[in-house]
Image (cartoon, rainbow, N blue to C red; front, side):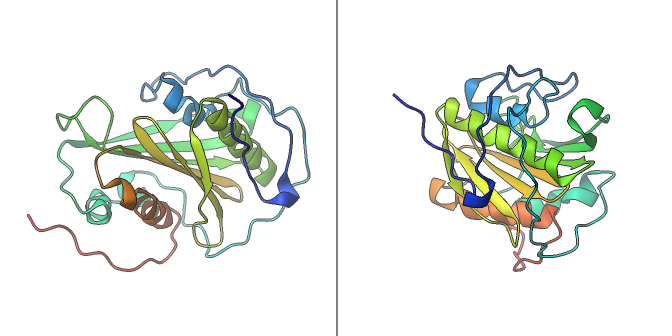
Amino acid sequence: MPSPTVGRVSSRSVALGVATVAVLAGCSSQESADDAATELLFSPSASATATVEPTPTPQATTLPEFPEDCAGLVPTSEVAAVVAVPLAGDTTFLFADALPDIGRTARVTCGYGVGDGEGAEPGVEISVNEYESAQAAQDRVDITLEAATESGRTVAEQPVGGYEGWVLSGGESATIVVDAGTRTLVVSMRRGLVDEAAETVVLEQLAARALGIPTETIEPPAP
């Protein structure tokens, strides 16, 4: 069956190639086809087959300083407030070195609800990447979206503030990918953590917090 077509904004349509994933050592293991698209965003072996001039991304707000820990990305208490369920388990932090081959200068990944008895993967995982140019960041997003359709995942546009974003659904996780100029953001959530009908709203709220976009205050769940 032909794979669905990825619909980026028309001014940024580009033919893309999909390459084999080379997962970085130390990163969370995501070897299934459902997670291959997310891993491509960080893979030095994947490359686009065409180059286009970058389109400036509208800035809804000034991006926060690149986080040095999970408290600077999204505090655990805020993640729990957004998902509106207790997050048992630990919060993990991973800093990855720069990858000059793909123009990445820094990457931070935080896992929330790790080792909560529901499996090895965290309940929520947030990764933010900084690139040397908007073009380099755009290339990683384009490759990720193309790979998502190739693996059979559903891709739907979901802006976050003034930034372009896409929700990838299907399989054991729901994910939002955001193109924020020189920065990319990936938020993944284990299926079943919230009702399926609420997944997109929760992912958008978490992404907004990681990008410093004001959102409505959400009270933390009662103990």
